[in-house]
Image (cartoon, rainbow, N blue to C red; front, top):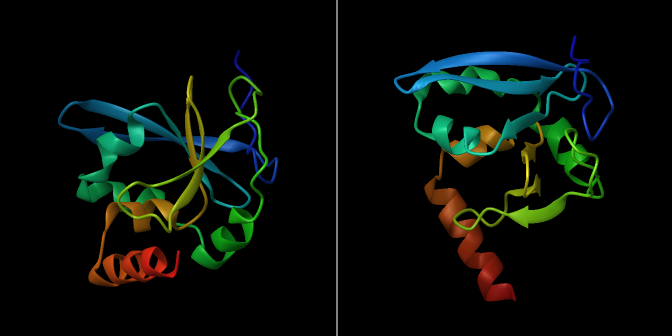
Length: 131
């Protein structure tokens, strides 16, 4: 029997949640503590356009912002140090990724990732101007 994956941020147990898409089921791991999400490679992209995937990111975005400050984490699959990245479209979204296994988003970040709003475009423009 496989042991449950541990959250790379708060070390709580991750629970699997399956979502049905036209291309089959996608299983996402959600932390029982901080509500962060682990996506195996390709899962976040597969769910980005699916309206039913909203419910999986049910964590408090304020808790997510606090946990986003924890940046040096290891992959919950292979224990290698994860790379810190920003979404290329919405640069304010920062997440951690393992090139071999997937990505970790803090609570509220997947919902933000799914919906690029006019405010996101404006915020990213202002951050580019300030650089």
